[in-house]
Image (cartoon, rainbow, N blue to C red; front, side, top):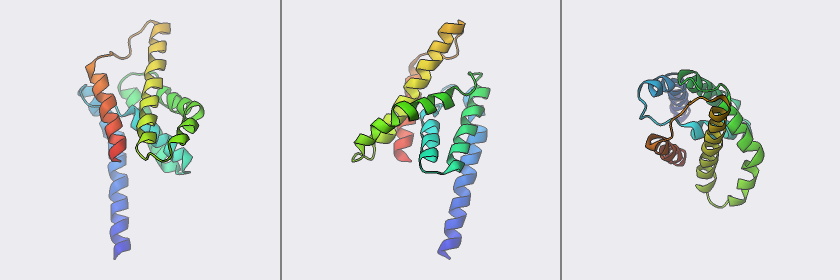
Length: 151
């Protein structure tokens, strides 16, 4: 009986994640006050790669691409920022192993900073304005860090 209930919870969990990956980026393009969850998606991608769980990585990649398409952002930029974080910074964060909250929070913070740095560089090079730096972006970063702490 426990196995059946656990299987149902597993199914509901995955259906909720897939629903969020499909629908949430559309809501972000309509309601600008919703958080972007760039760092959470990047951290989910890194954890899926690190723990050899490709389903998490694929879902994170789908969310990233869906969000970039819906918000008219440069394609694959969040994925590039996540990969840069993984190759350059992630292994240096392994020194904070004793702190269970430090690694996810710092990961989300660094992924967001790398992404916004690359995006601002992209905007400077091509003389465009993809994103507006205001209080909503800081709010999105704070909610992003709180989400990874709760999960």
